[in-house]
Image 1 (cartoon, rainbow, N blue to C red):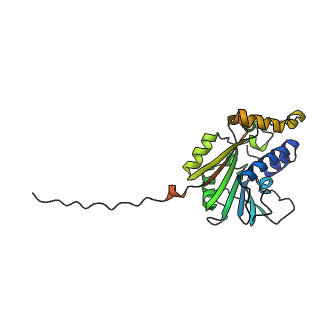
Image 2: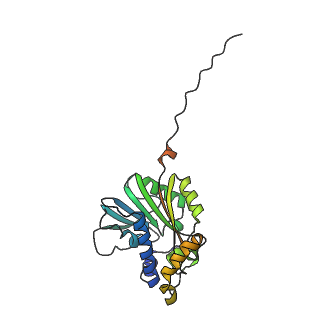
Image 3: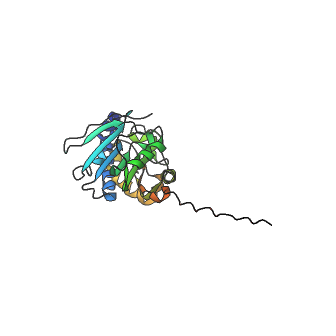
Length: 235
């Protein structure tokens, strides 16, 4: 069952949701420390994370699929939050320098079509970050969080999917090793779980975070060699 924007917003108001958002923002800023003057698009439910670059970007748009509904931006610099069909986004080709896809791919009706749209919108030197629940982790099965809905992916599955759609995987990060529980003891040990899990069992992370770029060489057609003319002599 797919979640809507209100469900996601309620999760991020909880203590566990706040810790999750702060952890993921740290990782995102480590991957993209500077986006000054760039155009950013958030797909899915990306508002809590686009805040990382909102004040420095040229424009920042949070776009949710119609079934999820739009989430209001918090007060601050003027930005846009809107809804659209995830397979037919209302932007021209090569419109964005950066695309962040979170709470989106695992709930998409047609994941490949959604990624094709992202490829179309991304500039030739642009980058995309995808955050998805890891099939081996606990968070993929915790329906009390936005990550416990839809289709989870292993690192290998997501990597192969991106490569089949002409993306190049640049890097990947595991995240979320604490149990998806609002218990006080779990919240206190949240960062300890994160350090231990990343060092000892990265394959069982709750989330996979993957950065990808366009693989332009994969879609350039090869020049066809002219056919040689055959000359037949009468014998």
